[in-house]
Picture 1 (cartoon, rainbow, N blue to C red):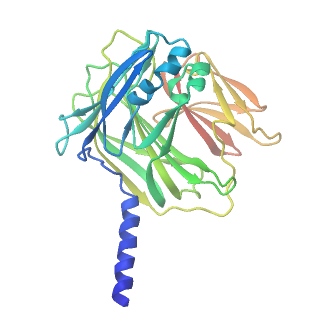
Picture 2: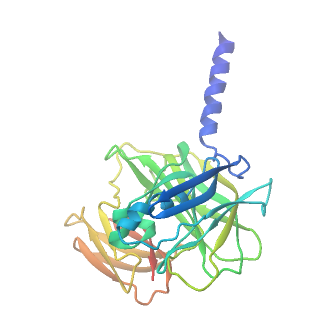
Picture 3: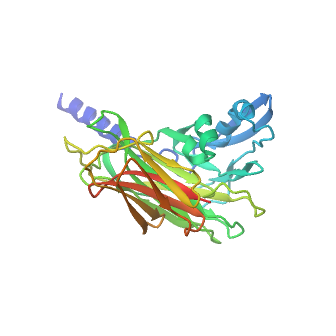
Length: 339
């Protein structure tokens, strides 16, 4: 009987450890063929995706009829995900490529360990690709704190735009009993002549609430949606790994907010970024921070009503992080692009 208990315990521990492993981290587990066809508008997309990972090209192509109905008659649906042999280990890496959807909008190649969905209505309202994407699933963390996610990335100096990598930690929140982001991290990837080590440290909103249920990794081949005459970015990714430590989850946790509570517009941001905070509570101290992807605080403004505007006219075009701070604690983050 004791031997049976030992075997069962071993199986349970193996299952627990398996849950914290990023599946197919070196992209050696094979690539599946992805085909999307449509007669109106005519679409014939032939792409690939690595096992246990997802690319956005097939999702965008599958929405062709809806995009056409909304006025995108001459949209281009191109392959954006590739199996590549320029790698750091094993036999393969994955490549993601930017593509011009229409004359005025460029879509980055997007690779994630989570399934993606795309809200056409959100896209039409804001003309912002990123805010229209949402993610589900990801890698189970089983209550651990996700400290850091690393990858090998190659973005050649032939390309003029930076790429990026984003990691978001999710957990069921005690205050709402719903899944919410409890931590995030970003890094901008500048072009180089060789593969480079890229790492993202997950910054948790509450240092006492780090027990993560799942985490989502997203790679972007470029950081903005502006169409230029420069070569379209092609970014290679290989050997993704994560490190963990013990997580914590107190019984009473301050409220966190979602995109339904905090509206940022216009996106991409222009000279002034407007904020509407639907959950504003009079008498509570709030502020809005604009942070660079390197973590440096660039601007902070008090939020004294449910609406505010932040001057971004002096900011160079690129990617920034907007933070909502409540009583000196960060309770919401969103990445925005400045035109």
